[in-house]
Length: 283
Figure 1: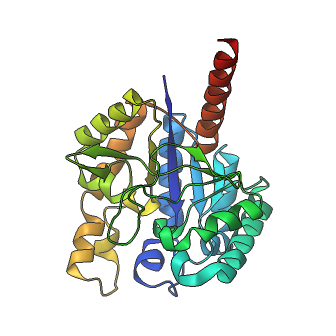
Figure 2 (figure 1 turned 120 degrees about the vertical axis):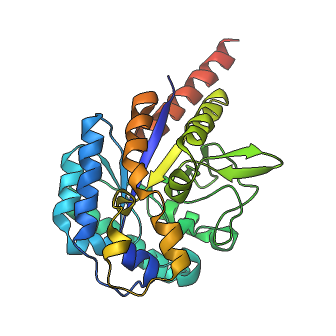
């Protein structure tokens, strides 16, 4: 059975979505612990891309994630888009977040995911910086053009770049003449679970692992009702809709498919590639 990857972008909704200068709140820790319990319930190991500012404020949750056996990755330091901060600030944010996470977690950080998938055609320079800094992989590219992110003709499969870095793109499936993102975040919340299941099975038929992502706040249905902040109606609707369905859908997905961390899926891909090379040599 093919192994898919489950990943969590560990951030705090108000700070990541409304204002990057807002403080990180305790709510992000409570929600992360909910996900840790759910993963433990199904004996699933995942990849947690942790924001540096959150790790500074709540180092104990980083230790809890690492102690539960999960892979730790960097989600940057401030949650500012890569294409807005430029190469020098990106390098500084990367070094700061990776150093902080490694010191707290006691494990090497080998993977990175950009805030809001902000490695796009105008910020591909970031991939060379990731390779230069010794990371194994990036998981930031959405291979479908959306309003704020995405590269329409990017490969859908995991692949190695000329600089040695592996790219683990977000999952999408072709339908009706275009690609559709299907396996994470708002798409996981807003689309019916039957569509997610069908998309993962479609990916399996192509021998592609699904790369699923979510955020801790997506298992917190009450958050937007309880926040005392000015939130536009459209944001409140799109960011809050169907949060109550996320935990039950995750449980169903973990029961129906095999999941692991991105590092595990990369190991599977490397083994498969080596096996294919040996088969070709034998032939």
